[in-house]
Amino acid sequence: MLEIVKLGHVYGTGPTAHQAIADINLEVAQGELVSLVGPSGCGKSTLLRCVAGLIQPTEGEVRLDGTPISGVPDNLAVVFQDYSRSLYPWLSVRDNVALPLSRKGAGRAEAREASERALGEVGLAGAGEKYPWQLSGGMQQRVSIARALAYTPSLLLLDEPFGALDAQTREDLEDLVLRLRTEHTMTILLITHDIDESVYVGDRVVVLGRNPGHIVADLPVVLEGPREQISTRATPEFVALRAQVAQLVREQINS
Amino acid sequence: MNRRLVRGACGVAGFLVLAEVASRTGLVDPDHIPPVSTVLLRAVQLAADVEFLGHVGTTLTAWALGLAVAIAVAVPLGLLIGSLPWVDKATQPLVEFLRPIPSVALIPLAIMLLPDTLQMKTSVIVYASMWPILINTVYALRDVDPVAKETLRSFGFNPFAVLWRVSLPSAAPFIATGVRVAAATALVLTVSAEIIAGRGGGIGFYTMLVRSGGINTDLLLGAIVWAGVIGILINFLLVRMERRVFRWHSARAEVGA
Image (cartoon, rainbow over all chains, first blue to last red; front, side):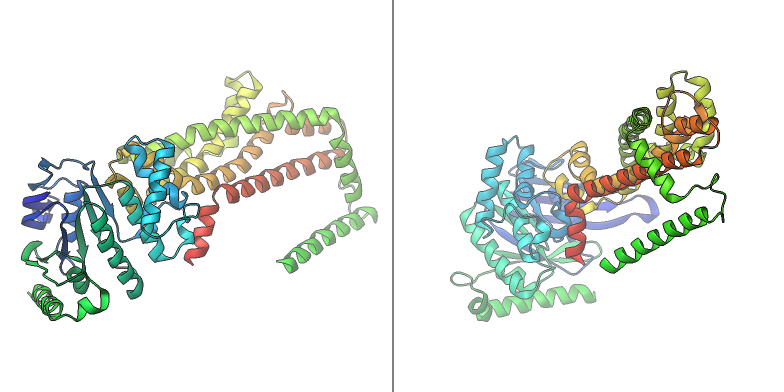
């Protein structure tokens, strides 16, 4: 379980200080998938960095399974938007996936096995020998996801993971995330600026506002049956919720 | 590519023929500039001359030792300067002052201070060849992708691990380019130091030896040909090694384009 309590962050000091986020309170239950959506400048990436332990927030705290986060927690993995920069071109796909495991003290054989298994789960079995730059964008992001999976995190942070991909690939990967969450017990925080995506993938959609970043609305996503790209998006519930989120985001941009 | 090769070969052949003709017809004094064929014959003979090969060995030993020490000093120093801003600020004035000093000017000082010829040569080679390696390391480290570093940090790796596993491999192709530039500089300094020292052997020393034996320009040029060939070979081998080891670097650039 992830608890964000009165979280705020100020960059710099004095007259140039900039409050990026303020008074953010959010609870995400174990195994829940929460979408965070908002206009640019709403402090999404600051929030992500605070939760990931990459920066120390100036106010409030983040607790993961009851333990306050200071520094990068052990059971957390991040998938960044920019896969081509976040994968290492000098390592094979398999070694990219296995790399974080070495910090957890995994042996070579063990890391290799976990790597192959994770690659299989994202549909890249047999691609381990290749190098990331030999793969398409969508496949590279699958490698990033495999790297996160192999790390067996209890919290997975997805930072606009599909923003750079074409529509078809994006849908495939949204479905991949939905499938993976049923097979693993992970809490997932999906940061996105794609309103459709936030509703389609999320159990809840949290809308963020700007100046400084704060929570505007926290909406449950109630959709019948398993999610399917075409039929789910055609349901009245989806359409209504999508419109509601879009309206809230628009208000934030105009405010 | 093939056309370029043919044209290049034509240029070289044309130059050789002209030089040969100029010397044979007496357009230039054959005692000063002997015919190319004579020079090349001398060069071939030198390749079988045990004494000359010994000098080549001496030069290559000093060159390799100097370059190895330069790499061992400049890369860690570059990593330190490139990753700690305060070290960068503290060393910058010193680097800016020392770097432009023509290294050859330091040879007499080195001869004065270091009686052992190999030590003397090594020290000037290290001084001259560490700059391109140091500068390339520092700049390459500054250019390491922040996303690449943050990714590893997000998996809980400490700053040292990030340096070792991300920054160093990212910077490696640029460091290798620095080493290649340094290798050429090192050869220049080796031969210069040998000429100035007038002791301890080496190709430079050999040319001085030939010079003192009367007008032997054909032999002198034969030795110079070998110095040039060694320079070309070193560069060729290093380029090949870079292409092999850093295949990911060039391949990625091609795919991304």
